[in-house]
Image 1 (spheres, rainbow, N blue to C red):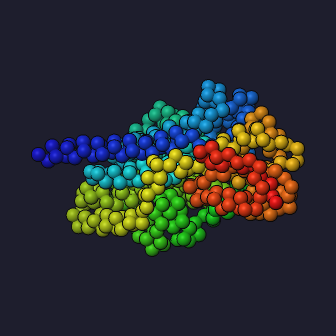
Image 2: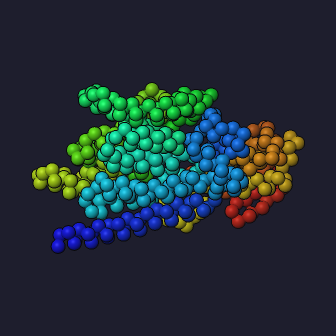
Image 3: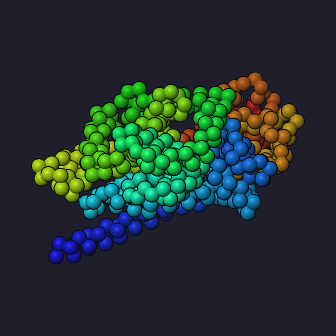
Length: 495
């Protein structure tokens, strides 16, 4: 009877998991199919990578301030050749990665979490995660980073045999993952260091051979590339260094930094005390995970310490999107704290711990506001950050590079250049991309000039165009105004 009930619960859990995965895929498809304009980061990456896409440079060629892993560039090259310049084609890899991460994460959870239905909590959290949905339509490496981190975590808890032949295969797989996702290098470094420390306590000729068989192939084939990334590309003209510095400290300095990081990842706008409670819950889960899996648990959490080390020396920041791939670690050890079966197997007196953790997690999630899910479903422009694709056709008709025309591109529309592949507007030499509208319009340089602007609201970054439009109506002479159903194109001159 007990086995029959267990099978029924298992089937029901898998059914609910399947429905959650479908819902997560639906949200990602809604976002991806909106086919929004490229914005400035994607524009910079595309322009840096043009020769790679065209095949005139190798796909591992170093990029400047905007960078991405070699295999994404390789696949992007083939997508470019097949589909040409197309937003959906370039964003296809992030979209597929964001879809694949859901079933893989569920499989991983079922490996770790033994109590029925507990695994559905972190799965649902990932399925509707605001940032992960956003990155499903973002031509960068964050979705593939997350996917590869889940895959490596799953492999850590599933690899039991360590024959020399298998270790060679694992190392070659490590090379493939390292060139596919930056997150992999933090995992591989952490795992290798864990293996080395364990080897120091159990030295033998055979163990040294196995260690070197695993480490040397992936290390020798990736070290030069990633040394370039960390020391050269990420600090190109100090651009990314300064950009990261503006987002906060490279290394968490206090509980406020951790609170901000958690709020960014989870959209749980909690206070410092609540974060401390969550840390205690996670430590309880880490305890039970380590009790059951020992060394594998150390390998699993090792990238956290490697990233903290890099952040401390200001080589790579422990901030926001750069740490997004660590979320599975945080969610799994938190969920493990309420894995009742595992606690019960330890001691009946410890069963009170997951009950307390469950109540505290329930308390924490009272801060969660998931109203954005409805916005994603109902508003295809929810994640819009650029109107370059909409703006460009009007500029082709009306803009003249004669020194009497100015383009106000609101900064994030710098990707206008990406759509002007034939340099028909001379690279927009008269485009304003930095200053806010008030600074731009009050600058004497805009006097007696015809100004081009495309106005549209950006829900994702909380900006509206109504104030700019009202200012233009009240203080400028409008030469042309076109409302195309998405936004307004205006040609105007200051009075």
